[in-house]
Length: 252
Image 1 (cartoon, rainbow, N blue to C red):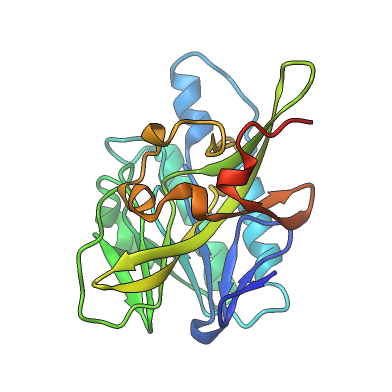
Image 2 (cartoon, rainbow, N blue to C red):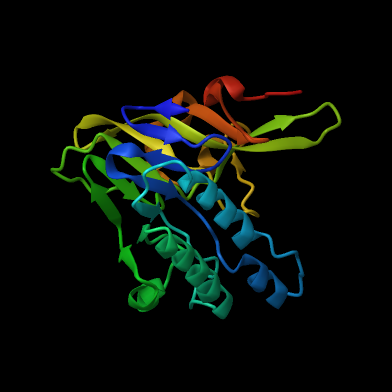
């Protein structure tokens, strides 16, 4: 699905492609998740890294990609970098290097101490945001600092957006989604894209079910979530479901 002037939501994947800067953009990998759960006594199958690598590799195929931009929460642990996180991150950077793709990342609230390993891994780490052309990339856990650069599009993660649909059996069907709309930035209007989490176990926050007070990202709070378009990624397809405000109390 094409949005904006040169952005593509890669079909069926929680991945954004920007042609003008030859970049794939993903968010919220939460590497090392299974290892962290095992330390609490909960053993789950190791599916996260495999799923992420499959999604990124598929998105690279057939596209001119020179860089992978990760907009935060590459790791799951809030404190030091665990052995599992470092090993999995090395697998991703190695896979990208073999394809000639550089890795850039903006730190998220989970990414403490990641810069310690950046040189060894061959990645560039940006503390608050990254600006490339007229695109601004940030994690979304903090308010954006004004800049004189003429930004047309802001891309964040952090929220893990999804759409929840209640069934007649009382269960909730959850589908990850992109959010796409406008935001006021530096005195002018800019596009805002909120990426779904690419992490396998990060199923999402149901933005059409939760009250607006439960929105985590101060950037998204400022934008006004009900006016944003929800573009769902589910079952191998990418499909617009319309405005979030119209999806409240959605039932099957």
